[in-house]
Image: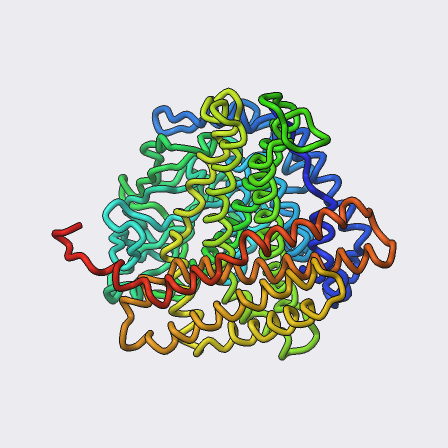
Length: 594
């Protein structure tokens, strides 16, 4: 079994060249965050991930969380790990200093969060949901709720959840039935929720549930949903815990993957109603919850990056030690010398690095949107974040399935055997394309709210940047950069054509547009990821020419960019054709012919 080693050098390179780390560190709220401090944080996080979380990943998967009589026991070692995680300040690192967090740039916390997701995805989910709940309360909660709940949540003494889904509703939030009845300064919440990540466990003293429910006078549909805070234990004014609230975990799911993360079914109000507190305005719960959902969607996209990196490391370690057959390539006596194994490893590496670049680019734009001194630049950055959120979530997790599958393939038949550990990454990756909105939901959001609603303005502005960079690379004296530039220009043109087609047909043929939504999301991710990969290759080439940096690392970065251009970017033309001409066959059969 390989040991996880965070790719700190690659992370720092990507943060600087793609995320804009140096500029972000000069923003008014981050002057004390120097590049040297960031590097030190990443090395400390890498040590914790490798030494504490990675050793629990395999045992946690095998043992899983256990439910008994309403209580959930975490996998062995997880409770101690959570305590040390909190004691070392990792639990609330991305949160605002006002509530006990460190207030670091999103770009920095994103790199650290990737390490948690690579080393132990199931463990990382507890922090992810807690931080999302913190964001929702901080943005929409009353001052009293913030004072009572945020500090212990940021510290990790209390954790948080998101309660959306109900058995009869699935992703259709308009069909929610949970109710909230007014009672003095609070409400009585009743209903059943499913698929609640870390909805019950024994690692923290309290669990703060954010619950979507309807008030008695609520209008129908999503416009009648409100958001309520329902703690497992009621909190006294002095911060101590009071009586147990009227809510219970009735079971946890038996899942394909992330076994150590309890996915709970929750029942609220069996004894008269769980006490809950309104967050935000009545009937505005969906808007409040979207603060948490968008946070979760970006972080689930980051899970795709993390699982892909771990699957790649696992496959690479096996390929470098497994002796089988006669290697065709010089310099290796193992299966790493077989060209097809090399192809899979290069594809895994190139895609993962492009996915990391996309996630870090989006994180950097979040920092610019929050703190750039120029108002117009803040507006442009926020528009990019909105456009990229479904792409980060959908494309990175979509890729993770293929990368984890290739990792199993590198192992051959041994990959299908659980003892090698390769299968866990595929099983864990499978949920990432589903929860927090399936790939189809992300794609419909992309072509609807993010594309058609604004006439494609943000994407077209981004395409102009991509096209300008592509043509600059085409004029490069080096053949590698020129080849990358040519592939990028063709791919960007394909994305532009698909965009124009969707905009032209969105009103008259919405079903045909929806049929091509997921291929369009894949096209957008492929091209934007290819653009960022090209930028990294260009930066590596410049540093090589100047004689700065690690020559071996930089040469590998240039080679990886060339591989992405030759093997991945070329798929953009195929995806364009599916978007613009594939809907007819997709919708050809009647329901009774399927």
